[in-house]
Length: 78
Image 1 (cartoon, rainbow, N blue to C red):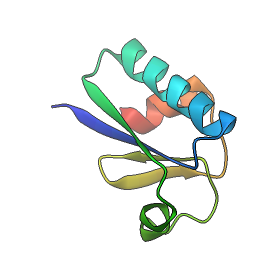
Image 2 (cartoon, one colour):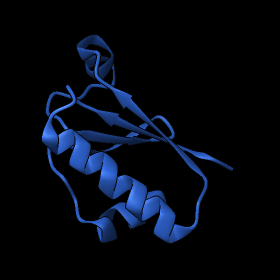
Image 3 (cartoon, one colour):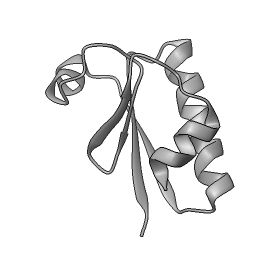
Image 4 (cartoon, rainbow, N blue to C red):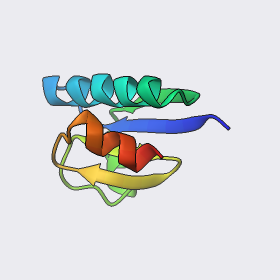
């Protein structure tokens, strides 16, 4: 089953870095995924996220306000 990975943030360098790491983690795990970047502030707030970047996996906020290493992202995706 394909995982939906959402990167919440205004499109800043940190957001782009988190997207790149999430993609790397998903590829290393060999899972099917789709990455969607959410830049609309109201949509970001609707997740209850006050600090970006944030990683949402299948509708659940996993990380907000920091960029975890690939090893930690892999645990969040598994």
